[in-house]
Amino acid sequence: MKRILLATRNPKKLVELKEILGPDWMALSLNDLGRDLPEVEEDVGTFVGNAVKKAVWTAKVAGMLTLADDSGLEVEALGFRPGVYSARFAGPEKDDLANNRLVLSLMRGKANRRARFVCCIAVADPQGLIGVVRGEVRGRLSERMLGREGFGYDPIFIPDGYDKTFAQLGAGVKHRISHRKIALEKARDLLKIYTSPL
Image (cartoon, rainbow, N blue to C red; front, top):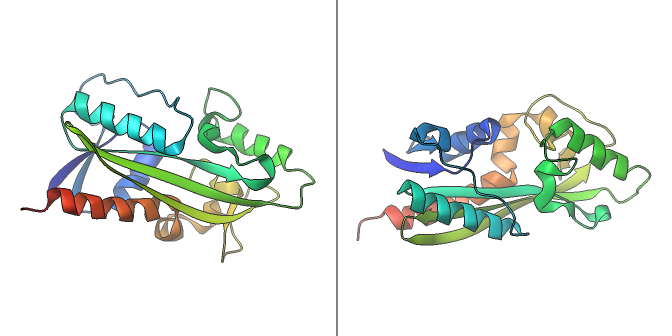
């Protein structure tokens, strides 16, 4: 089984990444290494930049193949905010409930509710960057929080082609159509090339 380090300590994101990667990969988290590796500060200003920074630094320090992602919600009527600040939009505590409430309050009375989830994934080994891929799913924002599954902005995002939020649709649907699923499928192609014998 091939091993890969997922550069995150977010337990919900880790579960999602492992489920989408599938059984061919032994996916480890930063917590599995038994070393106190600090998380990389996401201060680049773009999803791509943050993913690359995390992947390259973590792969070098950990000495193994690493996958890092940066993802978030972009809302048209808010000038594509919260964007890279999605996790800490309402403050440094990274409170999902507060983030959702803030977005909904800013959207009050706005007719344009178009939004998209974006995920950029970078793959690196100890020698440097292997590649970067991007996935996105478009949709609209609900008027209020709906559903109990998922995390982040799942309770307020309705993907195109559906009439329920990701939090209502559940992991079975989300993992088939999400921004992270699309990006991971592209990342798997990178990994196949990387791990293929010459």
